Amino acid sequence: MMRKYRICLAAVITAAALFTAGCGGGAASAGTAPPMPTETESAAAATVTETETTTRESEAVTEEDTTPAETEEYPKGENSVRTAEELAGKKVIALTFDDGPNTGVTNEILDVIEEYGIKASFFVIGQNIDPESAKAMQRAHSLGCEINSHSFTHSYMDQMSAEDIADEMERTSELIYEYVGEYPKFFRPPYIAVNTTMYDTIDLPFIAGIGCNDWEDRVSVEKRVRFLTEKCPEGCIILMHDAKDNEKTAEAVRQAVPMMLEQGFEFVTVSELFAAKGITPAADKEITYSYATENGWS
Image (cartoon, rainbow, N blue to C red):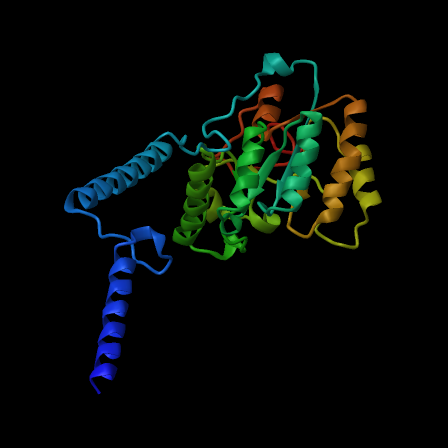
């Protein structure tokens, strides 16, 4: 019995010795936990971490601060108008478009205008102007084109009260000014429907023009091209439409413009057309102009 006790005691002493040796071995044992850091070491580590975080935040702020502010793609303000002297002797004609702006057909027509360096006038509908479609209107203005009013809702304004007519005009004019920095100079009545109340209420000259019913899909591209190249005399205002689905007019313009340039035409805005002809368009008379003449007709 005593012998068994001595054996067990020896085993316990041996195990204790091995355990003590393992704890004292530090990193020599794979299963041993690393020593706890001192207070000084912990404070130093915290300082390094805080410094790195502050540096990263400073770099982020610096990067944000040095990022250039976004600029407007198109400048705003009044476009210059060529004078009678500048246009003297030129075969002037005014190409105009109704029912925009939009991101499709309007831009297709502007591609032609930009390619050939010509000018046109766009009579826009106020309710068609939104942040996206306005970019086409701004592009037109940046190319020297004129932005005019075609009412806000494209309704029969000859059936409206003076107050409603004024509202249509004001809403459209303010939207045009908001996006291009210039108020419209002319007004084209929807459906060319006019009456005395409209003339008395609207303080802009009324514009009509000569056209080929290009809002009708049955009018082919070929007929539109022939109209532009064969039926439009010098000094006239051409009435076309850049409505969003009117691809045929965009194609007709693409084909006709170089042909008309070869014929000697100088494409001008409506303002420039009147300037070239020495005519001051009246806003206080019941006249709707299709030509730059005193009476509005050829």
